[in-house]
Length: 183
Image 1 (cartoon, rainbow, N blue to C red):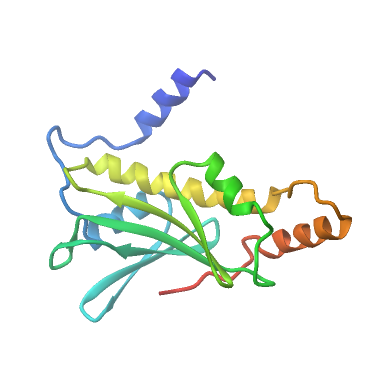
Image 2 (cartoon, rainbow, N blue to C red):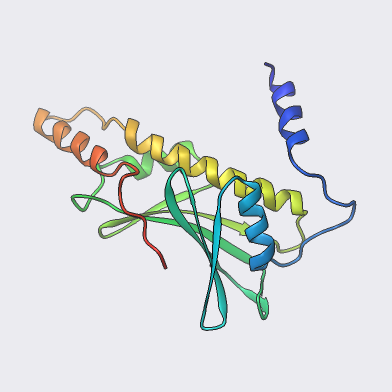
């Protein structure tokens, strides 16, 4: 199948928005709809007057972290976040760097025993509802690609065979069986 045909099929699978309809803010209801459109279940939990969204993709949980508030329950941006506990406490050297070298949309950070995959979604200036839906589909794909990256990562040749063995063990320990956290 050609790239043109693939792009055409992808465009046809995205629901079209009413011409001129733009979202200038994001709220729990609209983002939950986009999460569902991406094929994921979503749970809304209210805490201290703020609706928090929790979902899962690829069998691993993620949450929506609201950004800058425009008004009560309306936000200009959000961050999709998937924190994972790394068994053994650290990733092999190069995992994060190799991810950032090859991927553009989602970033990875390591915080102690946790590695966090994150992706920002902005409504500043206005976005179509279809754009929001596609961003959530992209997030789900990025999660899958990240887990595959962890499984398939091969550290650069080391000077010692023991160092390579340790790195391979640490990657397998950080596969998607790592526990996902809830906020």
